[in-house]
Length: 129
Image 1: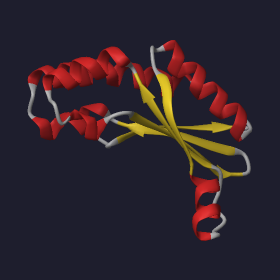
Image 2 (image 1 turned 60 degrees about the horizontal axis):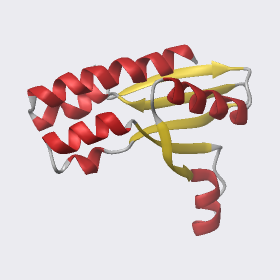
Image 3 (image 1 turned 180 degrees about the vertical axis):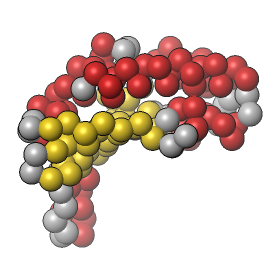
Image 4 (image 1 turned 90 degrees about the vertical axis):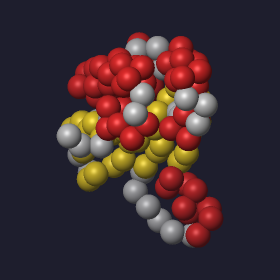
């Protein structure tokens, strides 16, 4: 199984793809609590040009709370990053971590169950784009 979930969206602007991702996250109970504009950051910090690429830190507070109660080091895995990148002129890729793969190393049956629930939501988001 891959460590990420991905979808290519065709014939849509980067901005419209980002709007769609944010809406789909909201529909599944996630909010965006952090945002990194990789293109802008690389230009500002090292004066390098890069394709449009954003990292949205998505959080479902109910899952985050339960996960932190189960494993106090879970903060290193939060929030769930959802990335958007311009692949070429007519394709945008949206991808996120596969929670099933991410939780394997922790070894908690309760977190595995929660990871399955988060996987279903993230997979729904990715597939619905």
